[in-house]
Amino acid sequence: MPRATVFRPAHSADAYAVALPERHTGPTDHVAIQHFPLKLISRRMLAPAIGHYSFVRDDGLPLDFIPGQFIQVHFEYADGTATKRSYSLATIHDHAMGPGEAVEIAVSYVPGGAATALFEGLEVGGTVDASGPFGRFCLMPGDANARYLLIATGTGVTPYRSMLPQLEAAIRERGVQVVLLFGARTPAELLYGDEFRAFADKHPDHFRFMPCFSRELPDAGSPHAHADVRHGYVQQFLDEVAPDASHDIAYLCGNPNMVDACFEALKACALEVKQIRREKYVSSK
Ligand SMILES: Cc1cc2nc3c(=O)[nH]c(=O)nc-3n(C[C@H](O)[C@H](O)[C@H](O)COP(=O)(O)OP(=O)(O)OC[C@H]3O[C@@H](n4cnc5c(N)ncnc54)[C@H](O)[C@@H]3O)c2cc1C
Image (cartoon, rainbow, N blue to C red; front, side, top):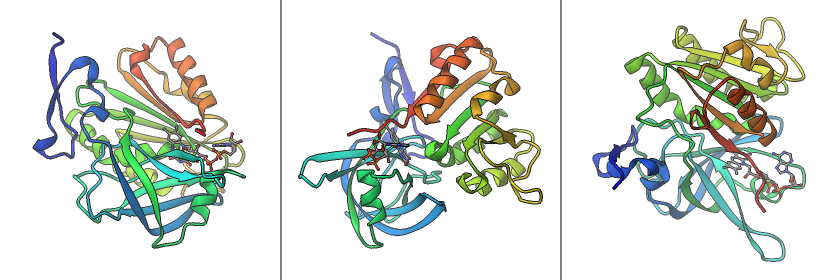
């Protein structure tokens, strides 16, 4: 019999504490997957082609999830074929969600994309069919690492926004270090950049926010013209943060090419596969 371990999401009530075999310490095992309607309560543009969508469950029930997880949105193509797309939850989550609390996602508009058309046409008060939560791209309670390397491109940064309260608890309780390497083309695409900068300012000895701009740097005088800003792709700056197998756990989220490149680079720095957690935003049709 495998040894049992107790896993409890930081935000959950005791009812969610479940004893599981060690090899199954994935969040999906602990939070029931459900199917539910989501009603749009607001949306705003985060960047020229990226929207932040705020929903509530229209069935009056709460959506409990663990930061890092995603939902799926179900819809049909014009010919009636059923399809679905995945979206990481962006909600800053530090407590069990009660009914009526927002379910937030960031949607990057892809030219010609089927879900893109659905989201662009969605009006406040409109609903989408969703299911979740899914995924294991989460901070694990048993982690005893000294540092997290969080790496993202584009909307791949949303899981880290959701994790901020958990990261704050890990900083407070065990003094963990966190580096966020976030790849965007331009300052206008630095999603939630003000929030990450404010978090870094609040925890200057523990949280380092390194935006990496591939095309255009912030103007001097902009709040994002910071000493930790870099010009190039995130993978170019891995060496600078000196990945170290003795104390790092890395998270990679977003563009599949970036995830693969960083995965190989981290393995070359002697990190073991179990120290590198990945979420690739592959297109599903
Ligand atoms: C676990 C997971 C989590 C995800 N989380 C998010 C999220 O939080 N936010 C988000 O915006 N997306 C996320 N995605 C991607 C998302 O599920 C869709 O694939 C994406 O929104 C495109 O859907 P679409 O129907 O608009 O385009 P599709 O109809 O699927 O694609 C239209 C065309 O665009 C191409 N294409 C698809 N995606 C991209 C892209 N990113 N860049 C360039 N070309 C593309 C396709 O190859 C196709 O040719 C996630 C994917 C996974 C697997």
